[in-house]
Image 1: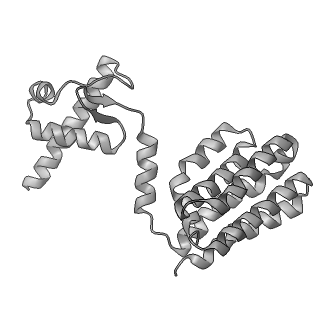
Image 2: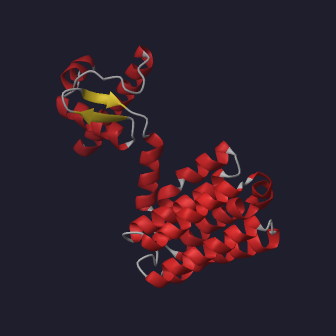
Image 3: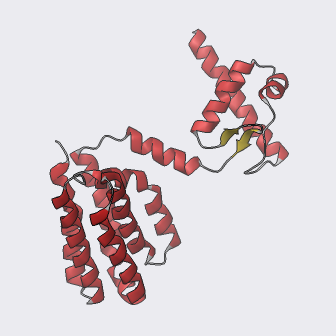
Length: 225
């Protein structure tokens, strides 16, 4: 019961802080009142206010800065993406769901890419692709892998699509991390990327879809049932 009351008190302070932000028209970079001031304003304890700040920080709404205090931030989407990625179990079903989403987006980009893509853009993607082979570790290799595909999505020139794809970055990178510690896997990834780029250069729709589909299925062998 005490735990429930405390949680309710913290939630109430969070609600009041959000209301305060709206009433004062505060924005990113603005400083919130101190713990002491808020405790007095809301007739609450400093511990409750401190817990409320932690909640705001977890949601990417505020952060603590030395000699300044609690500052409003705009990291809500990043916080939610990281939380989702951390909580998501990497299973066969999760792999198929995420790669299914990628099929619906990346595999259907050919027509617009064939019309919009430039030789320079293809060359830039090729450079990123080659750098995967010299990545310092598996994490860096998966980051470069994601960068390659993000450049492909960005090439379509659809901001909403790019933003949506970017929101899934932590999750997609976790899938891409599978098997990246093996040299043979890196070589395979680079080779498959090269096939995709060649299909774009040739404006070959069938080859693009074939190589993309094969590529998106490749990592399944590293996911446990």
